[in-house]
Amino acid sequence: MSEASLERAHHEVLPAATPAQIDNAKFAMWLYLASEVVIFAILIAVYIVFRYNNPDVVHDIHEEVGIILVSINTFLLLASSWAMVMGLQQIQRGNQQGLIQWIGITAVLGTVFVALQYVEYNELGHLGLSLSTEFGMRFYAPTAFHGVHVIIGVLWALRVILRARKGYYTAQNYLGVEIFGLYWHFVDVVWILLFTVIYLV
Amino acid sequence: MADEQKPPLTDQKTGEKVSPTPSYPPGEAERMPEPETGLEEAVVNALDASEQAVASPVVQAFDSAVSAVQEAVDQIPGPAKTHAEASAEEHSDTTIIMGRAITVPGGIYTVVFGVLGVATLVEIILAEFPRGLLTIPLMLGLAVVKAVLVVMYYMHLRSDSRVFTVVLLLPVAVTLLSTLYLITVPVTGY
Image (tube, rainbow over all chains, first blue to last red; front, side, top):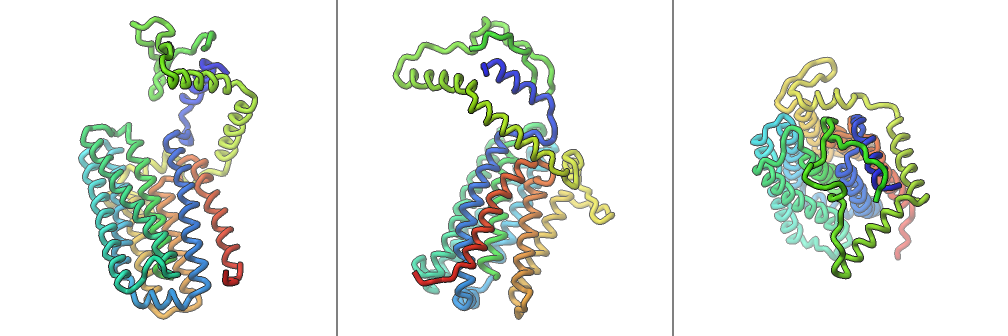
C-alpha cells in the first residue's frame, strides 16, 4: 500500500466518527494497563496462595496490626478517584479552574496516601515485619509496587495541573486528562482489591 | 512516494475541506533532506523499508485481521447505555437511579463514590465482627463490585469501545485461572 492510499484509508475511517471509534492514545493506555494487570495479578496471586496455605500466620499479623490506618488510606484513595472524575467533568464543561482544583485535590490525597503508607511501613518495621520474612515479602511486594504507582500518579497529576494552567485543555480537548484518569482509576482499582485481599480477608 | 492523486485534506473534527498551505510547492512537505550522518541514513533506510513492508502480504493480512477483530468485538450486544446517553449522564448533575432522579454535584460520579464508600464500610464491619462461613466470599464479592463500578463508571468502559473491555478482560481471565490452579497445587515444601 502506498503512502497515499494509507492516508486515504485513514481519512475514510475518520469521518465515520462512531462512538466506538478507537483513539490510539487511549488504546495504548489500555494495553499498558493490561500489562499492569498481569504484574499486579501475579503479586496478588502469590499472596493469595500464601494466605490460603498459612491462615494462622496472616490472622496473627492482622490482629497485631489493625486496620484503622489502612482504612483511612482506602477512603483517601477512593476520594481521590472521585476528585479525578469531577475534574474531568469540569473540563468537559469548559471549566479550567475547576479542573485545576479537582486534580489538585487528587494530587494532595495521593500524597497523603503515600505519607500514611510510609507511617504504616514504619510501624510494621517496629513489629519486626521485615522484607525477609515469609509474610513480609509477599506483603511488601504488591503494596510497595502499588505505592510507587501512586507516586508516579501524583507526579502525573502535577503535570496535568501545569498544562491546565497554561490553558492546554478545553471542553473539546481533554484527552490528556482522560488518559491520566484511566491510570489513576486503575491504581485505585488495584488498591480496592489489595485492601480486601491483603488487609481484610 | 505516491504517484496517485491524493484525496482532498479534511479537518478531522469538522470534516470540512482544508486547503494545503499555499506557499509550499507540491511535495515539499514530504521532501527529505539528504542524509548526512550514518544515523540519518539508517533512519531514512528504515523509513523506506517500513514503507515497502506496508505492501507486503503479511502486514496486509495482519491489518485486516486487526480490523476483523475490532468489528467482531463491536458486534457484541450493546451496553446498557449508548455512548450518547452515558456521556449526557456524565455531563449532568442529575442521574436517575431506580426511577428516581437524584441531583448532586457531579451526578452519577458522586453517586458511585457514595456506593464505593458504603461498600467499603460494610467490608470493614464484616472484617471486624466474628466471622462466619460467608464473610470472606462476601468481602471478596464487595471488592469485585467496587472494582467493576470504578472500571465501568470512572474509566467509562460501559460506553467506550468494546475493544478496551476485551483488552482488560483477557489478562484478568488468564491470571484468575492461573491463580485458581496455583491454589490447588499442594505445598510440597521446596
